Amino acid sequence: MSRFCFPLPLATALACTLLLVAPLAGAGDNAWSELPSPSVNGSKVMVYKLINSPTSGSIRFAGTSSGVFKSNNGGATWSASNSGITPSPAGYLFINDMVVDPGNGSTLYITPNFQQKSTDAGATWVRTGWDTENPQALLLAIDPLNPTTVWTAANRGIYKTTNGG
Image (cartoon, rainbow, N blue to C red; front, side, top):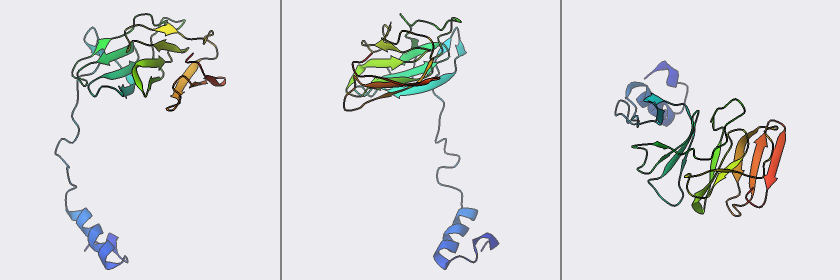
């Protein structure tokens, strides 16, 4: 037995030895495989947030450095879903965070600097009552029991709406 497994109880030492000499289950079995990524003009974009629709097992949303992308087939293909998103003052569509209403996969919130909302599964976006770009909205949380309550963590505090924005 390996010297690293002593002075442990016998059962623990045996388990330790097996881990040291036996390959890990699944090692080299391609437990992870790369899926197609959202892209713009053939170049992959940085993905910062992935969420699944709570109402459809095949719908995914990606918050990226180039806005929101949606997949209707489990991530096999992606299309931009940026209609109505107000870019940052510098013109970027960088999505800091994204949440989905747990009871309604059509309602989503994003923070590309300020809070924006979609009620049609990402087809279009509108600004919420968040009427300023400063403080900058960074993170989102949605109340699973009352999804019109949404919190935003910003660079200058935490904010809350109880009417969906």
